[in-house]
Length: 195
Figure 1 (spheres, rainbow, N blue to C red):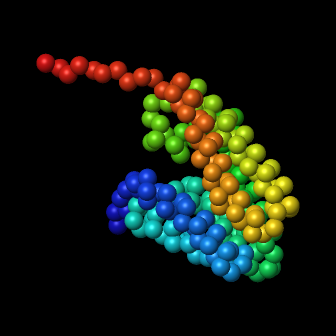
Figure 2 (figure 1 turned 180 degrees about the horizontal axis):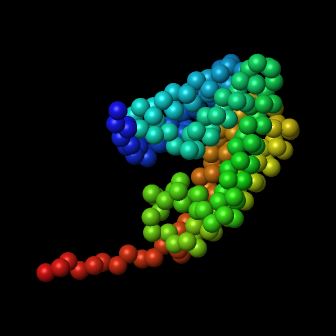
């Protein structure tokens, strides 16, 4: 049996796969409560993973990590009827991401490049090192922020922070990396056509 061909999802398809579970989580919490929202995000994440596998031939490492965490902490939340498990999931994910990137950096394995390399093919090694350092620090900050906010906010407020606050902060942080991308991407030189 031949392996399933890998197709690169469009930016819109990738956005939907990444953001749909979060949006469902937010809406379900608004309409019902955190336990319905937890079950809903587990189901939606499973659907996203199945679509990624059958439509595009590959579940990305990030989706695998998020999927496993959602099912582990979601199951604990539902069985123990304790919302703190789904809240701490965010901290665990960010600590894990920071640790993986730090391990890759210390062992000379540019793991961030493996994830984002297709988007920034011309970025030099120094640029990848700086991006990796910045994302490690950002994930540590998000983990610390979640630990403070999950203890001080109501559940509804925390859900809003998780869906909209983290998404907005991540977008702004990614945008703030533009100077590094510009400084460490050599300009493309036009090669004259051969006569």
